[in-house]
Amino acid sequence: MSKTAENLERAFAGECRASIRYLAYAERADEEGCEGSARLFRAAAKAEMFHALCHLKALGTVAETKENLRAAIDGESFEFKEMYPAMVKDAVAENEIDARHSLEYAMSIEMVHHKLFKKALEQENGNPRAEAYFVCPLCGNTVPDAAPKKCPYCGVDAKEFVRVE
Image 1 (cartoon, rainbow, N blue to C red):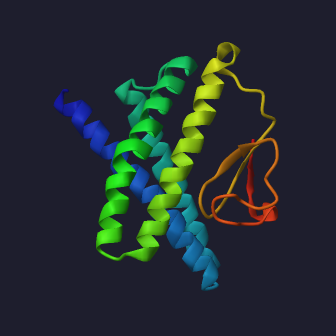
Image 2 (tube, rainbow, N blue to C red):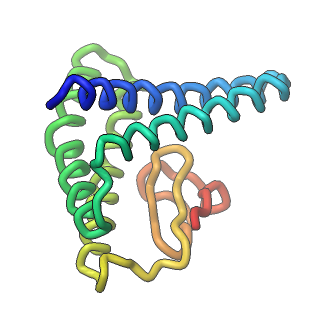
Image 3 (cartoon, rainbow, N blue to C red):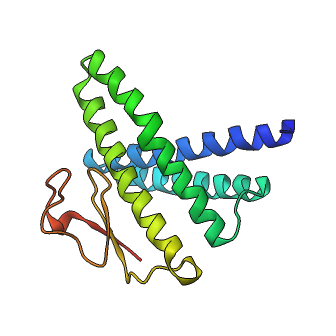
């Protein structure tokens, strides 16, 4: 890998982290009634996301949809088979309950994503027929077409799910 490609990979990772961090900061600012700061954090988060997308495109790693689905399947599989189990084990050993729950939720939902990506790949042109997806704001559970009455992973009520079109 060239030095430029390494730099783009590092820049991509940094921009992704910053975008999510700023969204968390915006939530906190909202909770504190700091509307102006919340808007600023959300705007910066969006800008960081745009930077990350530009870096990813410059790397040339965004392929055609079926290839992207295969890459997503491989990535999700790595996460729930290798990455998260080791992290959960560390959290248990260190008695970090909140971290353990966060990591276990993510590990479980990576399996859900894996299945959704596999199903999409099996469709003609890699194009599933869901009208919308519904995402649980606590654990990330992702379901096509309609939210369940309660999330089977964390118990969040259907009305809390976020619709994604």
